[in-house]
Each structure stands twice: as C-alpha cells, then as structure tokens.
Image 1 (cartoon, rainbow, N blue to C red):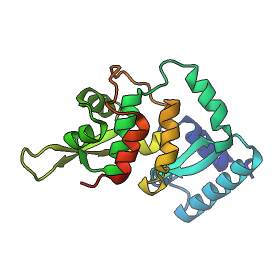
Image 2: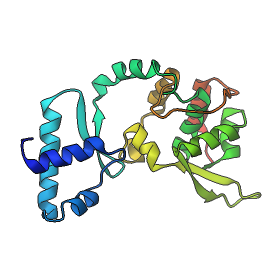
Image 3: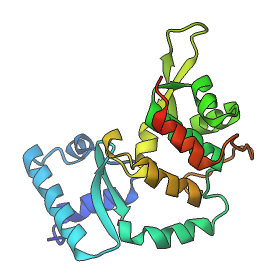
Length: 207
C-alpha cells in the first residue's frame, strides 16, 4: 500500500510540512496526475498509514491534511511537553483563548468582564502567536475590536473546523494541565477568577 512512488512522495511532503497540506497544493505539485486519481492515492495513503501503526495518523485539519499523534499517545506527549519550559501557554492565555474560542467574535472588554481582569498583554501575545485574529469592530459606542480564533488555532488544536471544538469540560482539563504546543512569552498575568469559574462564565454569558 505504501510502496508506490507517489504514496511516498506525498508522505514525505506531509511529514515535512509545517502547515496542513491542501489538495490544491498537491494538484499543483503533481500536475501530471489526474485530480481524481490524486485524491484516490491520498485516500489509500491515509488508510494504509493509519492502519499500520498506533502512534500517528494522517487526518484532515484546517481544510488540509496533516500527520498528527493519536489520542492514546497524548498522555505521554503531555508528559514530554511539560518537561519543556518553553512549551507552555500561561493560564491567563489559555483562559483568554477559551473565551475567544467559544464566544467569538468577542471584544476585549467582554473578555475582561468574564475573566475579571484586564488582559491586553495576553491578547497581544495571542495575536503574536497567530492563535487569534482581529475580526473588525463591534458596532457599539467606542467601536471596540472584535477577536476570533485563527487558522493557526485550528492547526495547534488539531481541528478541521470550529465544529470540532472540544467541550468546555475538556478545555478545562487543558487549562488544568496548562500545556499547549506553541511557546508563550506572556507576562505572569493572573485571572481575577479561578479557571473553572471563568469557564462557567463562558457557558452562560451571551453578548
């Protein structure tokens, strides 16, 4: 299944790519292959690669294809990530990201209202990490900036789209662990509320 030249060329691309690889990109690279045949080869590669081992899988993420770890390996990967001081987002950053992810588009004052603390430095950090993006301005007095999650957010969380967001209870576990892939340079800003209370507010607040 994985001995074909085209299979292995695509696998090498997926392994090397830092972003999800879109089918349209593969069609440009393999212009001599019929698009329908290329999709079939990609489907065969996914099926064969995913069935031959229990560590990694090729899956659709953010509209493209990427090699990711399987859920059963996440615990050991968490242990590994915790061993790397640079591989953390602060609790404040995770809380802010949760508010934005589940309430987007949302303004800075609305985020601060849920977290009971101003978080301009955290917003700046999340923008620098490209985990969030500006979605325009809200049509109210002062026209505050609206924030939403970015494609980079989907990539880091291994999501194809926002419909695959974990439940707030699962996100609470992520905040408890305090671990995400991207390094974070935010200050040690703390929430005005415990993280669980912040998430309870996320559940009930409507804008």
